[in-house]
Length: 236
Image (cartoon, rainbow, N blue to C red):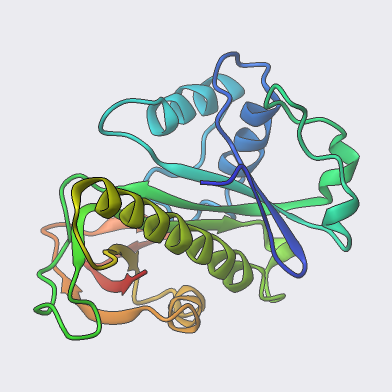
């Protein structure tokens, strides 16, 4: 996947540098995850120190056979092509060129598979797979809401991921003599009291698959919710 993804108004920067707590990538991760409003709908909840953010980031993004999660910081910029966003060694360069840090969007590996059973394969997606399924997540600062950034960033990331999956599938088919382009499955979970996120998922093309019942309620965004949540799915 690309380190940088551009859309009309946004630049997405993939955060990967967890080598040191002083890394600019760690600072950006901390800015997002320490914000109570941005993380209000997250089960994990906000972090309370840079050290806590660093440990959470390493848990989420440390490279391993079962962990290739994609976490992008999102910046609003009027002219992303003119920005010096990253140096050759992978560190953030001219930070003034990034624009305004407005939130994050991510595709996290979900080794446990789909939360609820999927419909049977269709003629539209005959080569679909859930073996490497991912869960979509996003967290935007209050000042960035109501501007369509979550939808635009989601489209940009999903389009880039779809191209990545298609290219990887084609390469594998060529090497193994297979045929057909495989589609990857992306899932999203949303609370029924979060209509803003539901609208974003619908604009991104996700389909409501059903209700995932849980045994206990959870505390989200200032109130006890559930027990359970809506599950949406999309093949890309």
